[in-house]
Length: 278
Image (cartoon, rainbow, N blue to C red; front, side, top):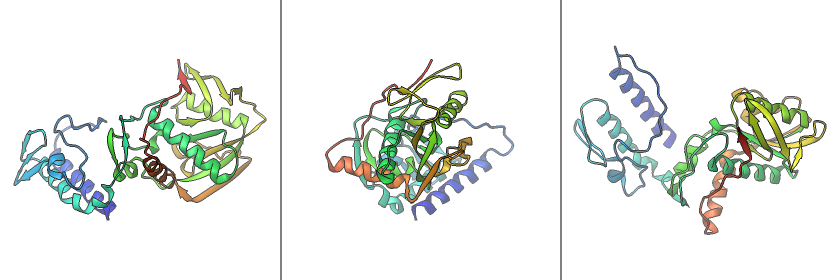
């Protein structure tokens, strides 16, 4: 139900946007949606007008008092407001974060938090040691907000149906992956501590030791990256592969978040300098 409502809203936004720019030049720009122009914030079930503002005919008044008359803004705002009752089920507060965890490369509190838990979960499921864990930054879609964390936040953070995998790779294959990241775009990594300079992998340590090209390492990853997702081939030349098709990313992260709350702990993490780009 929620997914259908969001699809309707997205289609409306795209349609109205296309109508409004006919005959005009435009370009895409990625910006962080922080509510700075309107004061809009993620609503709970109880504070929809305060969080999203109000629509009166063809006029929209944002939470910060700013008014938008005509154009597509009131229509889009009304669509978002109308969808909120149907989205009540995902507005449950499930955790608390003392500060926002923002996504950033080559590592960030959010990406480290995510990949370290993915490594632990894969190790538990496989019953084998995980030396390296690899995921892609593109798989984390939104930041962790400060304050109350909604179920919607976590579902939006990890929306893709990618399942856990355990791959055994020789050291030379692990090194090749890290060299690819150094030369192109660094990805989300747990286990190795790496130094990169001028697009080259200067050093890579696992358990405090240089990678042994002949040693077999246990690698946790997700199904999307096995055979070419984001041009990453984790399963290439694998010694063995186990696919846990019944365990999606959200099946790991959501129970983990709930367990933190049950234990009276916040959602918080610190980077550890695992990746240094000079």
